[in-house]
Length: 311
Image (cartoon, rainbow, N blue to C red):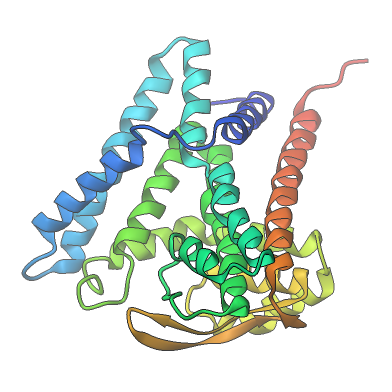
């Protein structure tokens, strides 16, 4: 069991390492994990009892690496175990990657280079962008920054605070499987049910802490109102609060119609104020960065309060 001061030190180290180095550029572990998950799907996503088979595949994909990580941090010498905790959090975090993928979209939009903005946006979202205008691209980038702030940063930090490096690893792998299997399509509707539901459970508390943080760091009153009134209309129980609070905090409108796999989806509008534009993409990234600072500051204060004070 990590003491709170040590846990905060390791969490801060993981955030710093991610900011300096970003995700590994060569042989990222998620590439191998994705190939293994694809093999499992080929094996199990067929025939009957697809929900049960999906749960079995999820267990075979996620539980072995998490258990190995638990065993390693338990048996390694102290400093090696600390280094492994930091490395696992670095693996689970994606703050630098989030910025590196989204900031160029804002730059392209500021230059009025819509073809480049469409190309960059298509790399991070599943909606179609071939005919998207500036407003649609700005909405997509803001939505991605706000939602992935939770998925790629704050969820991992929350589970690191609960269970150290293995907890952050488990969250990242579960979130990856949700991104691969958690679709309501004929192929994944039943097989991906377990991956989607488990991710919903793991993300429930982090998403609401993220939404509250977004609200506190911007237009708080509007953010709370959007969260309360608009989030229940959103399809995802966790993305709804995060994006509604974030949009309200920034005083912009996101959501609305978007084309997915050739079909137009009429999604609810989130937020309040004007349509998102290029500058709001940078504002969303800044909100995420400020939230990282807030979370670390809260952890540091809690760690200081946990240290006995002797007169």
